Image (cartoon, rainbow, N blue to C red; front, side, top):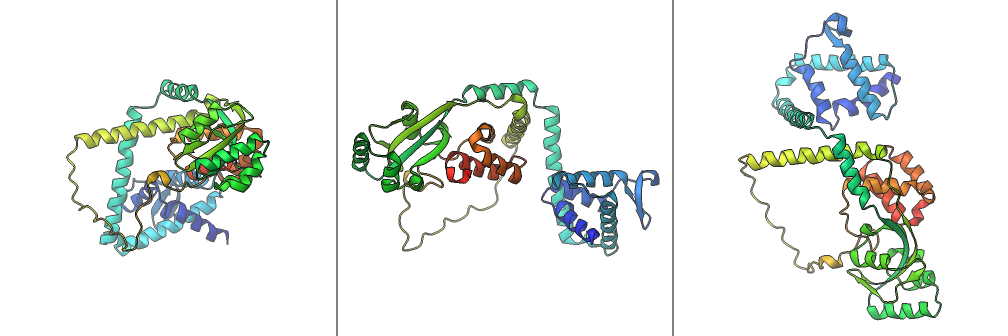
Length: 362
């Protein structure tokens, strides 16, 4: 039964993997595979040797894809034997000569070559420690503070002024938010949790920065979402994460930047002709309403959050800073279980959990 489980894992990890480099390794066995001597082999299938290196590569791939889980060598070797039997069967039937397989082989080859070009460039132009430190210092220089605030969102300035008047008379901010706010967080008393200024639209963040802790805005604040009454509850300085904890993330980001710059330079000097005709505009339905102005677009999370323009590195650093805070223990535990490695999608969800919706912190 165990031998049935392993091939299924390997089929998704190597035979059908999205990574074209791994697919290219499999395909290479059907093309000009290097000669393997008996001394360097771990098995022989109808006279064809399976090399020790092939087994070691498979062990590494499986360990990486299963987050460190290891499988007995005998099980992995059995998978390689089964794979070799299938390859020999395909070659006997000349399946490698079919148009479909030829096209797929060409696709894999081209993908592998494009990766090789990037790797060759990055090898010749490596990211230096000095570049990493300079990027870290530039980001940490503007790390600033974070704020904890509540707000009440209404449609008109007059409504906002009436709420401020009630607050001046001693009204409870949370109760007024639950009663009047049209923002999704109104049900939570307008609580926005902890956030940095760049996470909110400019007029809102500027008003929060200008307030003192425990004070609310005496005049309504207008944004594209409506009119806000804002209560700044607390603020605190952000502590930069240690350089060593984000060094690899910065290196990866700078490598991507160098690779992108290299591709852009190649594009500038290349003669490129687009032969694909432009797509015709999609006709609007007869009863369709005019598109609403961009400023009135409904936000995905709250009516104060700024568009997602924070780059990947800033997001990673910000996440680490927030996860360090003791009140975010639950989110920290969830992230350890669900996203042990950085993943933009899952960590963006964690960021929203930490910054915009305290309900998810429990």
